[in-house]
Length: 105
Image (cartoon, rainbow, N blue to C red; front, side, top):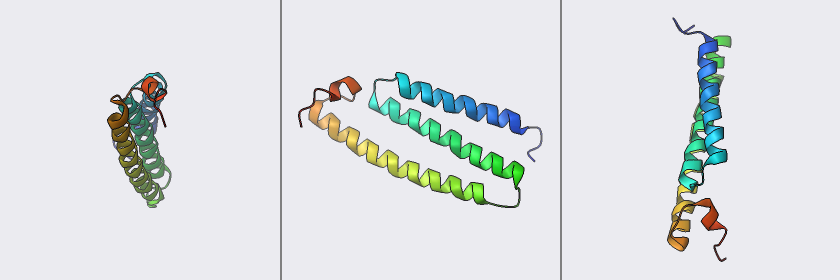
């Protein structure tokens, strides 16, 4: 459907993007870096929805609708996570994961 680009190339790119996000989520110690990694994972899934929908059912927009829903949920999740991170920073002065263990409730 997309001239010059096969579905294999796009799915390979999104798989790489997904696993970069998983690697970042598992190895990072900073809460903001972890949040960025989660966004990479969500963006890879959005691209997969759109590409698979485009190649399997080019006239139906279900993949695009699901993608818009995922983007909206990701935006809400990001705003909530940023507010929690700002609140943690105000209380303990750091956004490192190891420093949240010493926080007093």
